[in-house]
Amino acid sequence: MKNTILKKLKSVGESLPTIPTGSKHIKIAITGLSRSGKTVFISSLIDQLLHQNRLLSLSVQKSAFKASIKAPLHNAQRFDYYSLIEVMKREHKWPRGTDSITHTVLEFESKSRFAFMNNKTFSIELIDYPGEWLLDLSLLELEYEQWSVQSLQWLMSLDDEEADTYLESVDSLDSRSKGMELELMLHTQYKNLLSNLKTRHYSRITPGRFIMPSDLANDPILHFAPIKKSDSALHEVYKMRYEAYVKEVVKDIHLEHFRGFERQVVLVDVIEALQSGYGCYSDMRAGLSDMLKLYNHKNKNFISQWLSPSIKNVLFVATKADQVSASQHANFSLLLEEMVGVLRHELDISHIKTDTQLVSALKSTVSIEKKHEGMKLSFVRGILSEDGKLHDLYPGEMPSHFPNKNSWDTEAYAYKGFLPPRREYSADEALEHINMDKVIEKLIGDLL
Image (cartoon, rainbow, N blue to C red; front, top):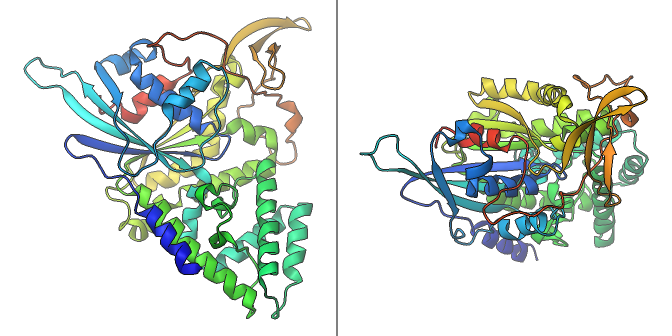
């Protein structure tokens, strides 16, 4: 059984894209935890580049260029831009999030500054990488016992009833614990716990495939869970499966997609952190740190065999800017800076350039001013997801700093989700957005 599983996983790992030859080729990884808006962001990014004649800033337009989507890379899953953009533009709905690694290659021709010189050509490869899977890269440095200790300590710190129930199950084990029924029961309990913690806005969850299995759903290689070290048969079986998962999935499949990429976009759901309370905020910051551990200057020797050339730029993007009025965007940006400030410092030590940007990949609201209880306030107007009706919503003032643990009031932040606007798009018209032009300038402006 084990050999069959590993053979199957190796065949997936070998089905990786080949780097196009010829003109300059830049690989850009785009990641973010679920609900951060990654699918919409990538769709909009491609859409803006294909139809850049209308909505891009003058600074980007200084070099006239055209972009086109190339044919799919050999044996690589392609990001389904055409279907996803249709859902947003024609059906006015949000698309389902992606749950696997996908690739899209865009080919560019940029106008030369001088008439006697040929136009520049280059290509970029956008890699859609689930943040939950990126968290698993931290497992490359952890033995099963180390991962178990970390996971159990994290669960103990949550003060969560379901987590306490799992910890009680672990405490009931002894050296005689064994059997397929117990193996599956404890794994299922832990997997369900992670899924429920995710819905409660916790981020630091491993293995990521437990909550986003993709092609490994129900595969026995995932049947393990964190338990205390012992000489039981259960411990040995769990350890064997964990080691197979790290080697055959995380190392041979996940990490392989990072070979040769130079730039990365990390999407951050600042609004989710603000609305979910101090515990989830702290957990999200720790999760972001775990996602970027590969670039820690202390790990340079460990990763040098994998990342060539090494990462040069990381852009942190706060999504869903349209959920607050334009007057609140300055404070929104300050919260993003606070969220990733320590990470930016660490990356700077590792000689990696960083930047931040506030965006809405698809602008679903407009900012308006209305009088409320004798005061003029900034509202957002849009079609609420919860009832499909047009509303004017006052979400409150966005703070310039995250609250401290004792004063955090999640009910003070009444931000809501909106549906895409019901409007018609012409054939060459890109999605309406907030600051996607600035993302393009910061991400590939030097190439245009």
